[in-house]
Image (tube, rainbow, N blue to C red):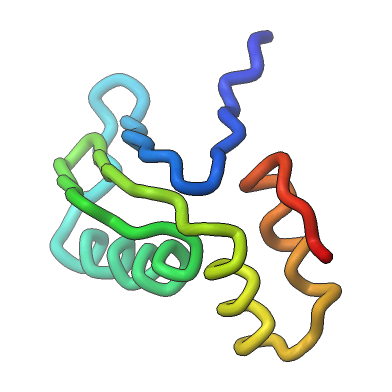
Length: 100
């Protein structure tokens, strides 16, 4: 089975999207939209800037720009206060960075 995961690069701009299978809905009620956006706002701003987004009942789209490695590292060091947390969280998300 093909691997559809894409390694994101710092300062790269990406169109991120996903859709439900068949006629299923991702968002069945207003609370689902709010919950999704709450989680998005918690996890994405530390690593990417969002330029545009659209949530539809069966799919979503986001246009994001991945932040610089220094900005991401600064955020996680400020939040977690330890240097060893950063590679665990971000290494699978962004390839090719150096910590020094």
